[in-house]
Length: 323
Image (cartoon, rainbow, N blue to C red; front, top):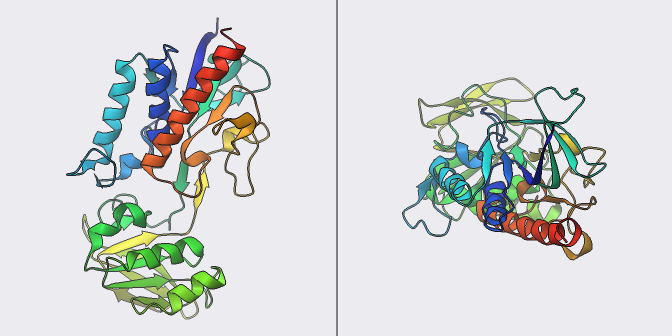
């Protein structure tokens, strides 16, 4: 017989684990389906599992390692009665309640679990350059978040890869800390909006490298430089930097929900139905964290939205299932 739960939380980053803490404290005995270990950002614990020092999460004035912070989140959720399983969801059926959730074989006739309410917190992954040592150097000079890591590069010379609004925003922000920011773009004109372009072109600390792309990251255990390739001539040249910020976009982990939950033009889940910040277009299904937030993408905002999803889920269950 299929296991039926009050709440199933899909994903175990700051949003999902905060939702687990709150729903567990509400005696809903949530089940967290954490995902499976991998080198990508949708692994258990989310993107913070790939982060070394986290210095902007309140309550840790000396900073804390990303994996340690997520372990504390997890222990707190379990302490209050949440159950966590390191299983990756392969299929969901949100057409009728209790909702069906599969792990393992997505073609199995019966779902592995059913739930009266589902909280989606599958996050988003940063698009990367595809270089061999890129992932192993995340947190050691490679970053995808200027707001998170910019402070570390005070007085350094660093590079930003990209040419859209996100790249310009990252580069401009980083000039607060770095002595020089090299903006590397594979074309001869920026894709960013005019106002963002003007900010980059008039900033004395930003040096633009047109028709260029990063083809190699130098350094053993820590970024010591990058190699640029001219996209027109193929010529290569080293660039001495201590950091590389990859700013070529994000992709929300929403493949499971295509055709069932409403997505915006960029693939993020649409929330905010019936006066509930986390509600999706299907009653009883809520979403939180980076899977529905393409603006802030911070651990603290993800946690806040996880709290909202938990409270929305609890109130919805009280009105529609437990009444």
